[in-house]
Length: 572
Image 1 (cartoon, rainbow, N blue to C red):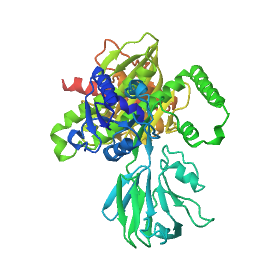
Image 2 (image 1 turned 180 degrees about the vertical axis):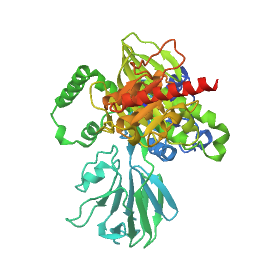
Image 3 (image 1 turned 120 degrees about the horizontal axis):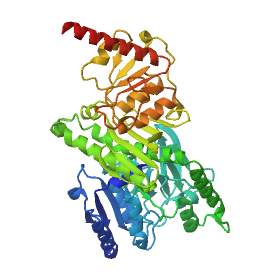
């Protein structure tokens, strides 16, 4: 899902190995055509001089796996996703060929690539404190005298619990991305590395038949104590030191993953394992099953277009929620307080860019109307209504009650809705005629029948009219500050009724679908049909209830308004 966020890339930092001039020229040419600046950095140099926290970067490595590992070391702490281009002779991690570079980059900026989170290790020993994506090798130092002892003894502890003492040529403490060959040589498993958080302790040339690799959770703290001097290498020498007797090496899963980009031009993991390590389970066998999976997926998409649209909208909303959460955290920091409007503008832009690009790529013939950008006109009967940030006032003041609203209309009738609250990770969704859900759980309105038992939500109330009419007769009137969330809270039973003084289509379209699917009744203030796309009116009033109290609430409001008019006439 993170891959959808790649549509917001603003600049590229390229780590360039020697003899990669042609690949760099190719990258620069493509980037120039897309008006994306490129910062070439030679391997061994630091990216900090060209890095800015406010910029969305793509990290590209041009070289082999050594260059890629250097990219991981520099890009990962800054949460920059990495695309590896293999301009060397052999690579396992950097798998995009130079001939496919521009096509892969097109896929990336269209949001169609994937970003996998790869577990890293954090290593502390002597003067070494670093992270690594592959492994930590602790090995015996060869003796000067060829007849001296050639094995080492290493004691291992897991969360201070003694695991045992390993005798042999050393240990590899590996991530799931780490050397599969090393694991296999010790009769260990093949780890599928994508989004896999674990640590593997692999004995090297063990002198005991019963010793086997050990798999631990990534949260485990592994301590290794060497009886004699030993050599420590992280990721094949990216960091290294010599250990003295009784030195302690501490290894644990890093909180910062490496963000690895994979495209349709990469070999998948099991193809690479099969080709490079001779994995026999694929020998003389054809991948016919995958074709059936693809066919079934396509058939389902054709049979159920609306469900497919719901899936895409949910992906877009969750992805757009990531930059909103990041920027929301800055609004109350002292150094950003004078620039709140700029932060809100940036948040609106980033979220809108992600959502509209994802939907336009997936449904190029659909019309897209967003509060924050120009309309994209399509030729089909379908229209998307988008509010990338509903509740901007809340957002600007650090309040968590803001949301993303995405609705699909068929001939101006809303048929699908997604509302996502990034701060609480609540995804409300519904398709017309099907149950409403929140994170997969079915929603239903309340069944309260008396106003004095009910909690009401109010939208913008310029004269305090709704509050004054309903506060005493109910258990309270609250204002959340997001029309989309108001309707979702009605759907979930957190409120019994909602009133909105003035609505815009993108504010409420998704929420109306969700509330109705949960059993709500939605009308205008007179009890007539609520028209989503009102024309020729100064405002578009909405009342939504659990259905049971709808007529009671409408009658109460009408009575209060009539009473108010009588009092005003008497005063005049």
